[in-house]
Image: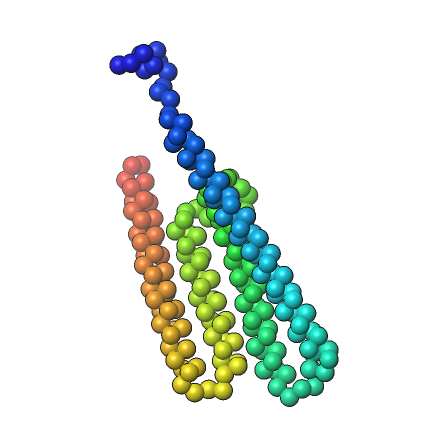
Length: 187
């Protein structure tokens, strides 16, 4: 026994580990700020795209043949941009809640209890983005083998992500059931 532990004081943690932990939290703060800045940039790009669409329509584009297809493609791309911006904000909030302040007041649907939950959200956003991107490609396409190939590739990625998500959900439910059984046996 050394003098510190015999006096009843707990041994001090090495300052290097504490500083390393604080530095890692700083890196997470930088990532959160980066996500928020990226979100602002994407929203600004979406607003610029909306302005371009409005100018095109105001300068006679409303009476052009194919205005429906033009709007379908461009509005799909606009939705895509806003969806990416919102996803960036959701990930920033999730990282903030996981690494900085777990008690931050967020709506229930936005609470991030684990890194797995954040990864699941990312996979769900990827599925939606793939669908929106494919919809835009279909609207611009004239048909043929290229769009079929793209559709097959998008579908394959969606199926793979769906399979990963199903494994996660089954594992999560099994763990939840085991925890409930353990709690029930203790009573």
